[in-house]
Image 1 (cartoon, rainbow, N blue to C red):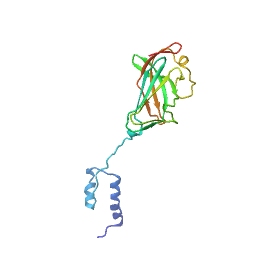
Image 2: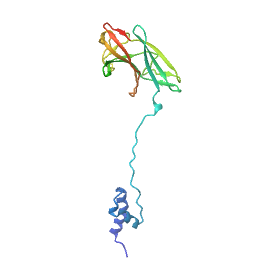
Image 3: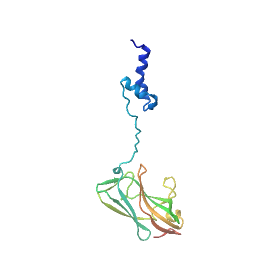
Image 4: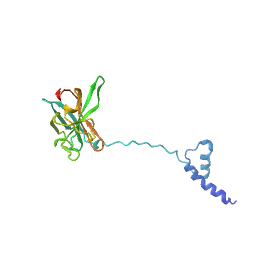
Length: 197
């Protein structure tokens, strides 16, 4: 008996339908029909999810710290905690945040630090494995602004920061937005720009 031409076309289309609609219910009878036709439907497709994470080695492993000095000075420390040498190209800032009963708030004042011994976007800080650098800074010699956009002219501590208690932080931010922060150092700004740690 010869199968009509339209019937053979219909049979040949069945595998395509099964591929487009995988995992159809057993009630439809499709698995039994496939076996009758010599086809074995595969298992339903699995959903695969993945998360994009940065490699731990993609960013330098550094620890920042701030220690009080004398006469308005502080000492900032940058330590490479890895055994491998590293290069950190980033903008370096000092940040002042108000201290409240809930703790320190978001920084209110920023001072860009341009020191040849600290990272700059065009001049990376290079440290050998486990190496640490210490740099003294005078808080009264840097210029403070209400943001770090560079659009606002910086002023001295006495002219820009109202008297009160603040938390000082050292921050470094690279071109990708990765940020390194030190712990906070509490200080008091008095009228005229005096400092008490």
